[in-house]
Length: 578
Image (tube, rainbow, N blue to C red; front, side, top):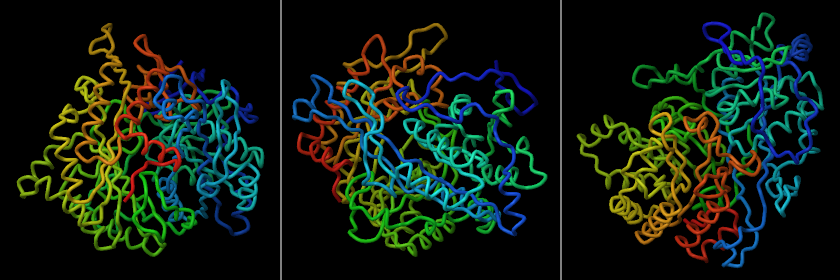
């Protein structure tokens, strides 16, 4: 039962767990204990005149390796094994919260486990039927040694992907094995959207819900200061001694960043510059990043941001919930950010803004700064339905689509990701997306324009929409296999306009989104072998999960051609060459 315990808090008296990681995983040893409200080791550390120690970790990741689906395009190519790609990046979320924690006086370290052990792979879980979970990153012995050497009072573990939840909770179990008195905290997209399950389903003492830049530091202070009170920290959840789950506030706080009203120092106080010196940047010198081949053969690459949040509110996306509304950090802030990462040996960047082109005039300024600092970039933003006020302002200033694309090219942009998603207007509109994404002629012209200026386009497509009925008791919208065929044809058409790569990601119910409560009833996979966007998570009376997986592989092969798909499998990343 769930009920309010105050005007702002939420209590779940008998929490249940409906979804979790693979049942074949080893059982956790530290489930169900009350959350620690204080850091006991911190008291001893302060007595020695030292500051509390906080270790932030990205858990080692796993991916599914299994036989290719029968009667699929992969089998036709002679590819009998299907492998979910490795997906990881520079941990900008941890860098953000580390900056605030250090400013507050905490001693903070970061370990990026997937990249620290990128070439280490081994099968860790047998899922049956020839399927396995393959782990990449540091192993438990290495992680244990790093944790023991750092000797933390508090450990924070990032979980931005639902498919990696099993690895995050296993790492928390390892930390509690080392010392049950270490306070464990998690945050990111998955525990933010799934906090009701994440708290009873893991050894984490606390879940930081949604944007963590201010909340995480406030939690650290509540855990370590003599008069600290975790119930006064907004936007967290924990376990009481009776097993009940408490969320301290029903709503999470978001930073009010307003460059037009706030000076640079005030914004730096809220959002300090991420210090990439906390990472071993040699880990990011690979010739390929998540979007394809790099243009520089020296130095490291890094993911960065010039804006945070998104205010479009697509039903299937949890970015507006986790990161809040769209906010520009200001070109003065971004200028300093670029100067600092250059000092750390970064020679090219991926811009991870969720909606860079929300304000085209601001985007133009961002492009100019990237050119100033000689940082070629990949705009990995999803271009959602824009705020028309800003678009109209840009048009009144004389900005055209061609001028904007030319400015991007002049600023060093060599690759973009266009979230086209579907050829079917109903699939888009009923999930909160603009129908204009399905206007194939206009999209083709835009692809041609990017190509003309030497910018390669990866097009994102989403088969398998399952949307709620318009009215209670009505029929849900379930995209048919025939409609998905139209999306495959759309991808083929855009490749004819010069698109470099067609990337299909299967529609997946993400915890915390508007779609979550509806779509989870169609789930047929646990967190480990679903939720990767390369594996189907849902099944309906119109199609099975295997049907959707075959359609995804059909789009890959028919749009990109056998040679590119074979190269993609060989590389383990998108076959996009600069």
